[in-house]
Amino acid sequence: MAARLDLDCCPLFPISLPSPSPSPSPKSLALAFPRPIPPIRLRLHLVLRRPRRLPFRFTAAFVPSSAADGPADQELPLKDVEAAVVIDQQRQNQGSQLRKRVIFGLGIGLGAGGVVVAGGWVFTVAVAAAVFAAARGYFGLVRSRGIAAGMTPPPRYLSRVCSVICALMPVLTLYFGHMDVSVTSSAFVVAMALILQRGNPRFAQLSSAVFGLFYCGYLPCFWVKLRCGLSAPALNTKVGNFWPVLLGGQAHWTVGLVATLISISSIIAADTFAFLGGRAFGRTPLTNISPKKTLEGALAGLSGCIVIAVLLSKILCWPTSLISAAAFGILNFTGSLFGDLVESMIKRDAGVKDSGSLIPGHGGILDRVDSYVFTGALCYSFVKIALPLFGI
Image (tube, rainbow, N blue to C red; front, top):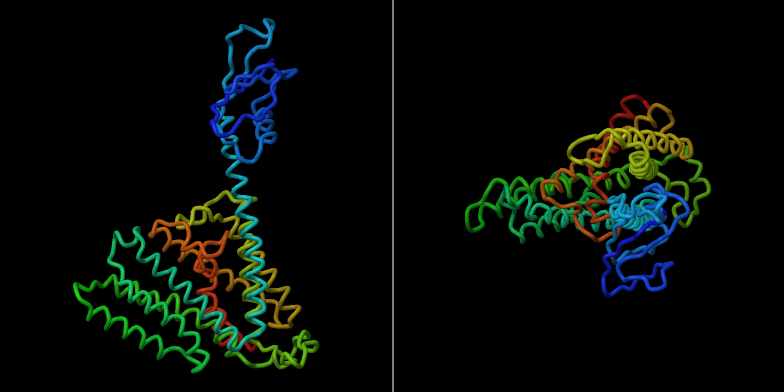
């Protein structure tokens, strides 16, 4: 039995496959096999023995090598060989994207950990920079063709002003300790600017701009309140006993620092376990908003989030109750999941996959921080209200 490989070659790329024939045609190649090979084995042979990029298209068919095998004109087409190579190329691209995602994810994680430990102005400025980039991404989505087709987006100058206001909110939160006045004043200024502009102001412009102030500016400020506002020392944290005096000593390890570290770590664990669990076991779609998310992946993310929160609570000795640590993990997972879904809903209406391309393998800043938008407010409320309420 012989397998004939018909190649539709690109003239810029010569054929490099060996051929048993003395003078092979540039567009066909005969490969002899000792026995019939199933289609799946032929696909694997062709995919594994060729280079990564195939600059040509090909089809393959089995033809008899002798009269004993059957009539000379009998052929068994293998139309799915070309599809197998396309799938192989897609897998290679996905592998490259995954490597970029892992490398840049580790870099971002290490940098974020250092910023969280530093606290104070370092943490606030980092949050303000991330907020500014996320706000730019949000207003870019609002002005995109998909959303703008059904509503009138805010003017470009107003989008830039709102992005700057969102970036200033974390700084004002650190300085004043609250953000009610800044948010209310900002919303009033935006409403005035829209009403006084030339043309015909629309309510859609006001709603999208004010939601941008709330989504990209107000909510992230709770991370500043959580990290820098909860300054009570975490006395049971043993890490503080070995912390250098030049870096603040034991007093540096506050409830806000410990809570922020546990929260961010559990969110990272939720995303990681949900991604791995979804790829390995994902079968049931979770929601139409994000078709790639599965119920199995969500359960894996929830399990990973709770496990990391409980482990870190034992290491850092906060919170002291196992039930409260598990509840803290569930709260982090809930906030991260719905934060991701809200951004997915915005991107779906905008008709885009990512809010930007600033971070290779991750998209834009908003794609990376969407899981943290609502979580800061939930965690701050949990630490400030729920734990004292139950005497923990």
